[in-house]
Image (cartoon, rainbow, N blue to C red; front, side):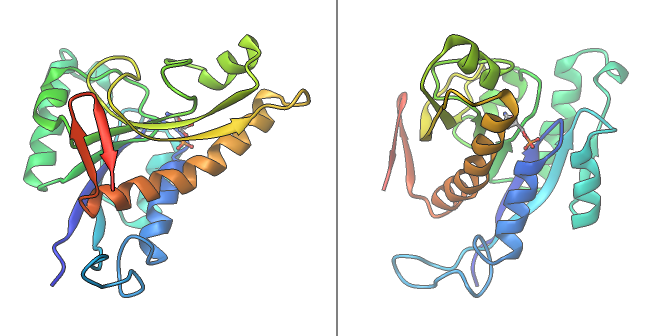
Length: 217
Ligand code: GRF
């Protein structure tokens, strides 16, 4: 029996990356019989156990409902402070024995309540080649700066703003005709391939964290 690899996804918006992970699971790329089973590539059984969302009206909440993924949806203003709702989130993650938390468009900085216990099991996807253009509107930042190449980064979360050891990056060329919309579309396409790939590598134990450097085998 393959041991399940349980993930939780944190998201605040449309959730196209959440959908891409769910599609990869359902299509057998992250779980099931079609995932190769050999000594080098044992079968995977990745399960999305929870969506965490801080915006009740976000499209990702509806996606989770349609996919049958349980969701913890909350409004930060209902809590005394960030630490209080993060403690509740942590308890839920621990109760579900979550192996990996994937932040995919979660629009909040998180505190040590989550970062410390989850360090090394908490990743984020960001639409630029970090350390360039951290923070909000990374795609617009790249266009406004005039860089000719931008991209996508998946990294471990260390509590800073899009800092933390980098796991994988893909570049995207910017053309003179690009608008924020056209560039975002190409970046999202790459995100939807890269994020499930990184989850697969981590689930297979192929990503090693050594200080601030990661090594993927
Ligand atoms: C993605 O571009 C991701 O890189 C960034 O937020 C966006 C989320 O998009 N962190 P979606 O909600 O997955 O469609």
